[in-house]
Structures are given as structure tokens and as C-alpha cells.
Length: 263
Ligand SMILES: Nc1nc2c(c(=O)[nH]1)N[C@H]1C(S)=C(S)[C@@H](COP(=O)(O)O)O[C@H]1N2
Ligand SMILES: [Mo]
Image 1 (tube, rainbow, N blue to C red):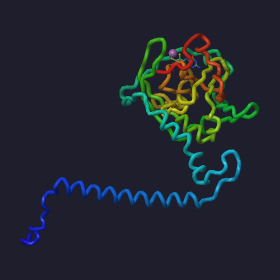
Image 2 (cartoon, protein in one colour; image 1 turned 30 degrees about the vertical axis):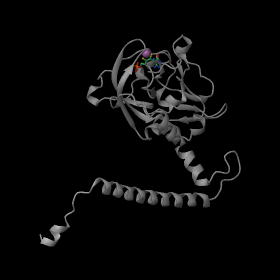
Image 3 (cartoon, rainbow, N blue to C red; image 1 turned 60 degrees about the horizontal axis):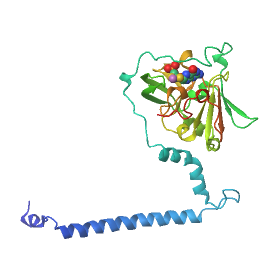
Image 4 (tube, rainbow, N blue to C red; image 1 turned 90 degrees about the vertical axis):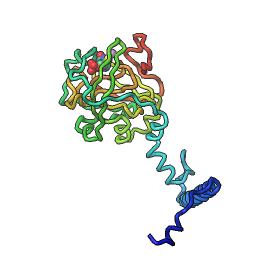
């Protein structure tokens, strides 16, 4: 190293110098961000206004963004509490079977012709096959399943996140309602769920347990897995899904159990 270079080695900054430097940096960042924000604002203001109507008057890009992401944002902000998850090795190899209401007494049930019915209105329904549901993004969860009768077990389930399903089938507007109702195909077991639990990121429509298709006694071909609730709300063999502002009927609530049955 040349002696002239050595002289350039900086002395440590004094506290005062440090503060000055930091201020300089943060002002720089402030102006850079501010500039970006101003540019973005200009873009927004110059963009076309939406047609008049209920939501009219909002700048089109903003409205578009709200529609697409509203569900996700609500989900994100209202559900910071995730249920504890476990490594796969901890999952039970044999999953316990509890009650079979709406399953064992349904002799007419034909799994090959099963379709999930989503009630859009009084007269309109979507009918969705299991292959369509399996084609959606897959999510796995290993968590401690809890039954109000006092047992619990670490179980491994997989399926589609309920929010992913709802967004894919453009059911956002229906989800604005306060409740979702689910029933077995024969209507003998039925539950109601409030919106926050429906939108919880760990709530899934499950078609696999321990990496294999769900067996009949666990709710084939599709069941609900909702870790923020006790077992009673984890409806096996979903037949019909509906939305309402009033509480849907709920099998165990009718027997005096807590309607929410949350953990
Ligand atoms: N269709 C249907 N779903 C149901 C039930 C039922 O009797 N019928 N029992 C509930 C109860 S009380 C529990 S604890 C879980 C048990 O699920 P498992 O049998 O797969 O362990 O399913 C829930 N979902
Ligand atoms: Mo249960």
C-alpha cells in the first residue's frame, strides 16, 4: 500500500458525524420514496374513473386491486393467529374415527357421481367434481385435531385452501355474507361457520389424509378441515355449501353445544 493511501484511512466517526450521516441517508430515502409515491399518485389520478354505479367514482386501477385482493387482505389482517403445526413424522399413522352421522346411514351415496353443490342463489347452483378440486393448488397441514369429547391426535391432511377455492370459483361476493353452511349429501349432518373461520388460512377442503385419498369413514371424497375449531365443525363428506347472513342450522348447536366451537 502506498503511504498516501494509508493517510486516507478514516478516523472513526464521532457521534455527531454519525447523526448527521444518518439524517442525510434518511432524508435521501424520504425524498426517493416520496418521489415514487408522487409518481404513483399521478398515475392513479390520471387513470380513468370507473363508470357510475354503487362503487363508481373510484379510480379503475384501485377498484380492480380491491376486488382481487380484498379477500386476501381481510384474511391476512384478521387471522394472524395460526394453529400450531408439526413435522410429518409426528402425524398418527392410523387416524381415529369418530361419529359417522350422515355417512353410515347414507346407502344411496355413490362416490363416482358425487359433486360438490355450491348454492349461488335460491335457484342457482354450481356443481363441482373432485378432479376439478384436485386441480387447484394443494395445501398440507399437520396439526393437533381436537374433539370436544376429550381426545386429540396429530393428523396430516391435504387439500385446497378454502380461500383458494372461493377465489377460483369467484365466490368473493357470497363470502361477504356472515356465514357459510355445509351439509352432508343426505343433509343429516350440517354445520355453520362464521366468515373469519371460513377465511382462516389454515382452513382446507381436504381430499387426502396421510398422502392417500380420504376413506369413506373419514368423509370421502371431500371433507372440511378447520383447525381453529373443534372436531364437530370438521364436517365429513361435504355435499352442499351455502352462504347466508343468518346462522345456518348446526347439528351440535341444536344439541346445546357452543355454536362457534372454536379453540
Ligand atoms: N358427516 C359427519 N361429519 C363429522 C362427524 C359426523 O358424525 N358426521 N363428526 C364430527 C366429529 S364430532 C369429529 S370429532 C370429527 C371426527 O373426524 P374423524 O372421524 O375423521 O376422526 O368429525 C366431525 N365431522
Ligand atoms: Mo368430536
